[in-house]
Image (cartoon, rainbow, N blue to C red; front, side, top):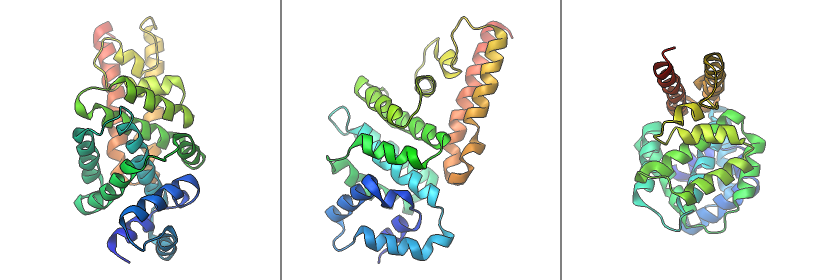
Length: 246
C-alpha cells in the first residue's frame, strides 16, 4: 500500500463509516485503482496506537465541506483552491498537503455529496469548538478571491445550521471576514447599544468560547487557525475600547 493510503488511513475514525465513508470510497475509486475503504481501514487498525484520530477526522471533514462551499456558486475559483492548498501546507507541510489536496480534488468532482448527511455525521462526533473552527475555515476559503458572495454565505449558513451552530456564533465568525463599522460588535455577539459593562462581559465570554486550548485535541497544526479566531476577538474588543475610550 502506498504512502497516500497510509496518510489517509492512519488518522481516521468516524469518517470511514456512514455517509463520509461512502464519499471517500467513491472518490478513491475515481483515481486510485484497486484501493478500497476496507484497505484503508485495515491500515488504520495497524497504526491506531500512534494515530491522532480526531485530527484526521477534522481534516477529512474540512476537505469535504470546503468542496461544497467552493462549488456553491456554480464555479471553481483557482484562488479558492490555492487557499486550501496553502492552508494545508502551512498546517501539515508540503508532502502531506499534496496528498490531502489530491483527495480534495476528488471531492470537488463528486456531485453526489449530501450536505445534510455529512453534517449530521460530523456534529455527532465533533466538539462544538471543532465545528466552530470548520465554519471559520470555510469563510476563509470563501474570502480567498477577495469577496464572500451570497451563494457562499448561504452555503456556509446551511452547513452551520446542520452542524448546530447557532445564529449568534455564525454571525460572529462571519463578521471576522468583513470590514464594517459594526463588525467588532458582531464578533462579540452584542448590539452597538450595549453598555461598557456588557461589552466587557461579552469579551470574556468570547475569549472563553474561542480559546485555542479548546482545540488542543486536534494537534498543534490546527491551533494556528484557532489563534486567528482568538486574535479577531481581541482586535474587536480593542477597537470598541478605543472607540469608547474605555
